[in-house]
Length: 283
Image 1 (cartoon, one colour):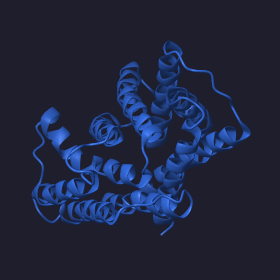
Image 2 (spheres, rainbow, N blue to C red):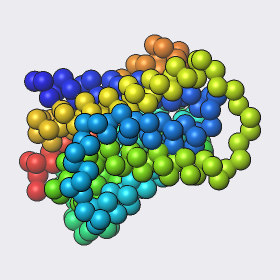
Image 3 (cartoon, rainbow, N blue to C red):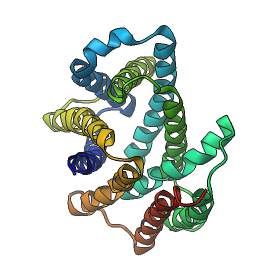
C-alpha cells in the first residue's frame, strides 16, 4: 500500500509539473528552463546515491549518457510543445501514448515482437488520437505534432533504459540521466540566441516547484513506489498522470476542453488500461 501511495503522489506531482512548466516557459526560454531544471534536480538526488557512483564502469557511464541524451531530446521537444500549446490536458494524453508506442520501438530495434494485448489496444489508441487531434478538421497543430514526437522519443528512452539498467540501481540511473539532460540542455541553450527576458519572482517560484517538487521529489517517489509494487499495478497507477493534468488544467488554469477532446482522452486512457490489463493474460 505504501508503494502505491508513493506512485499516486508521483502522478500528482507530475501533473503539477505540467502546469508549473507552462508558467515558467511563458517567461524563460524552454531550452534554458530544461537545462537548469534537470541539472539542479540531479544535484538534489545526488546525495541519495553518492556512494554508488564509484561502482559505475566506463561502459555503464557511456550507456547512461547515451540514454540520457535521448531523454534530453525528448524533453526539449516536449517543452517546446508546452510553450505553444493551448491545451495541457491534450498534450498529457498524447504523451501517455508513449507506453503504447514502446512495443513498436522494441520490435524495430531489438526484434521483440509485441504481444496480442498490444494489437488489441493499438486501434483503440488510434481512435483516441483521431478524436483528440482532429477537432479542427484534418489539420494537425504544431503542438500536437511536438507532443507526438516527444512521446515517440520517450518510448525509445523507455526501451533503451530497460536494456541498460541491469545492475545499476534505478535511483543512480535516474540521477545520472537527469544530470546528462541538464548538462546537454545547458550546452544547447548556450548555442542559441535568445531574446531578452526578465526573471520575475513568479517565474522563480514556478521554476522551483517544477525542479524540486515535479522533478526531484517526483522521481524519488516514483522510484520508491516502483521498488515495492509490481509492474502491472505501477503502470496502471502511472496512467493517472494525464487525468490529474486534465483536472489541474480545468480547475486551476481554467482551460476549456471540447467534448470531443475529452472523449478522445478517455479513449486513450481506455487503450492504456486494456493494454496493461491484457499484457500478461495474452501471449
